[in-house]
Length: 250
Image (cartoon, rainbow, N blue to C red; front, top):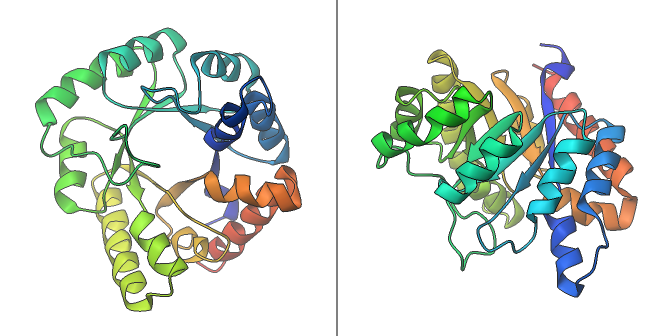
């Protein structure tokens, strides 16, 4: 499979986190998104949380107006967020679980436990032209439920795999990679488009990028951290190089 069949989505939430820590307008997440676009990102992801802890409504409007690459709007399945997404009509909407006290998204959405409600929820978003994705654990019941409600895309939560890698828990890392690998293949057999995200680094991205059925990786916090030292363009270029090197071996 050619390397460019694997897309890189860059999450710019934490540019807004830094801005909001002090107030004011800097650094500007829209500027970061434009720099990522220029550096070769295939899409931009932004999570508008209910408490607006990082991305704000004006950021979403600015991103939609400024970008020529796809905008992936991460959001909780609430009436408020549905109304915002229907007005903005982003390329993609990714539904994620959200708790106010969490520092970051801690797990996957429970699609299996909320099938009827989520099926109704995504219908107007899909009808408005947004591509619907479910951010889920690498679990067969969640993959099946996402397929049943008509979501064409799933994004598998890689957090446990990435954490095990970072902490040197190699047996746990291998188990988590095996789970992801199995569910990538299973989801693809069902006709779903497979994305993976959360916590991936230069070191840990390779085994995920090497899975032929994975179409997109969404990476944010690590890249924004690396941008402090390398600059955003070089940080993205290095991630792209790591992804392409892994994919070229398949």
